Length: 302
Image 1: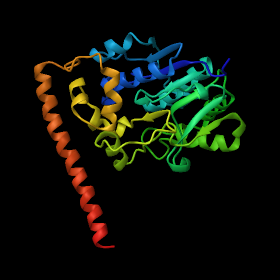
Image 2: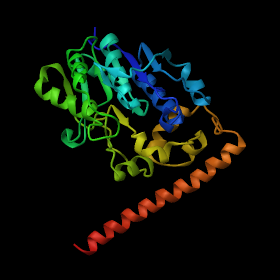
Image 3: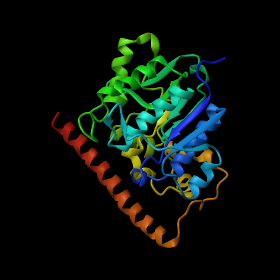
Image 4: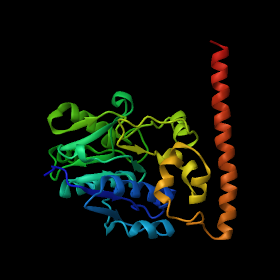
């Protein structure tokens, strides 16, 4: 029997406004990729504020929704930002049940079965863990010694939001602990879960290019929705099928049974969507032009 149970855990809707990124096509696609390729025994979905809309109606049938109250503090330390509350929830649920935690913007490419005989598994973020070990994907056995140690370190938590300590406990701390307690954790290279990277060139590679992305060492792709929402908001099956990029190729097979218009909002909202799409396309094209001009300038001065 594997040490890590095939149980999926998601934490979403811990803020009333969903951080401006409501449950959408991209989240449904990521969830379906995990269910199809990991084939879990259960998939728990923890929320404080339940999502709504057509994409959630589809997804809700595929998970076990569990309403929780996200912690506002830990060890007397306030958790002011919703991202830090989610960080604590994932550790608590994995310590209690064991399993696989995935952020809602993680698209699974293949089975995790060959990782399940470890105690705890994390992936590097950045080349050679240049940023740390990220918590967007965590595999752990119940009562994982590493996760217990990690959670206990929240006694020193000090971030108040997007400040200099923003990713201290989510990314930097697990790297420090992994170096101190290497027997408690299996560390995978950045290509396992966090490839391509979050850089602008790599985001374009995912969302604006069909140039193949090597996936031989990749279990899942973190889609970096916080930085890539400009590509992801207001997606419909029609838009996914009409554009040829890496992301659209990954997403299309997971919505093959849906009509082009699924999830299309009312007419008034559609006009607002079209306006946003025009402005978004202009921003993307302007950014590409600026990057091309910057490269050209560097070459001319070389």
